Image: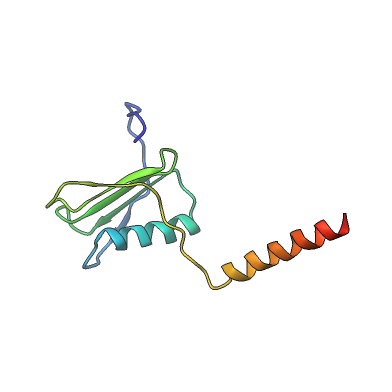
Length: 104
């Protein structure tokens, strides 16, 4: 994590009421949230103060998942969520590069 900035800063917090809210679910939610709202920092918390919490700092490229009943686990990246059109875009990019190479 990046060094503390020694100041308070407001961040968006996604409050959810979901069970189970495990590390895999947290990563999936982070990936979807990042896709729709690019932020510098993400926080997801369950509806009660004793439930799991997840933090992710985009600048540092790391975060923490903590379920409060076991040691915190470091998150190293927000995973890419595959989309149905990803393969088509890869193919289109490859075809474009091939066509550009042939034209020059």
